[in-house]
Amino acid sequence: MLLILLPLSEVAVATPAPTEPCHLTAHLNESPETAKAEGLTLPRWYDLHQRILRLLTDEAGCTLEVVGSPWPRSLNLLKSGDIDLMLTVSYTEERNQFAEFLGVHYMEESVLVIDKQYASRIRKLTDIGLLPGFVGVLRDAYYGEEFEQVKADPDFQQYLLYANTLTQKLNMLKRQRVLGSVEDKTQFVEWNRQYPELAQRYQIVLTLHRAPVYIVASRQGVSKELRQHLKDSWAKVYGSPEHLAILAEFGWSLDESDTAAR
Figure 1: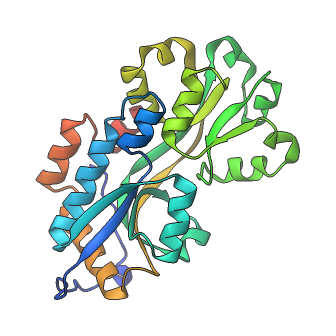
Figure 2 (figure 1 turned 60 degrees about the horizontal axis):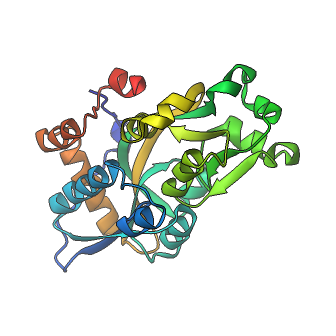
C-alpha cells in the first residue's frame, strides 16, 4: 500500500467536526449530460470518483453536491470559491495559492498515446513535430515540467489540439481527429476496455510524468477550519477498509506497483 508520511512538524492536531451545517460542492470533469452529448458512455471512474468524494464528506459530516463542468472552468470556479472540492489535481505552486491540498488521491501516470502506424517515429516528446496531425491534450492540465517547457515553444503548440473535458478528448481519438493524445495511463487502459477499437489503433509510446494527484479544497470558498477538518477526515479514511473496498470494486489499488502497471 502506498502511504504518504508527513514530517511531525506538518502533522496538525485534528479539528472537531463543524458545528454549523456543512454542504460542499465538488467538480467532476464528466457528467451524464456531456457524455450523452458526445455520443459516449460515461466512464466507470465517474462513479469511482463520486464514491471517493462521498467517503470523504461522510467522514467529515458534510453533505455533497457533485457537478460536471469543463476542467479549465472548474479550476477558475475553485479559485473564486464557487465550488469547494476537486479531484485528481496535480500539485503546482500556482495552484497552491488558491487550493488546499487535502491528501493524495492516487498516483497518476501521464503517457503519450500514438496511432500505431506512426508510433515508430516517436522517441522523445518533441518528436510529435514529425506527425502529420495533432495530439489531443486537456486544456490547463499538468503533464509535468518537460511538457510545460516544450508546449511554450510556438513550433510545438501547432501540433496540440485542446479539449475542455476528458469526454471531448476521447472523442478526438474515436473520430480520428488526432493521431495521438496525452492520457492518464489508468484511464487509457479503462477506455481500451470500454472501446476495444482504441486498443487496436493506438499504443503508449512515452511516459511523460508520474506523481501523486490530490483532493483539493478552495481556499476562497472553504474556511481554514473546515479545510483542516477535511484534511483530517481524509487521513482517517485513506487506506481504510471502506476505501480499499471501493477501489477493489473498480479494479484499482493503492499499491504503488499495481498503480504503475495500469
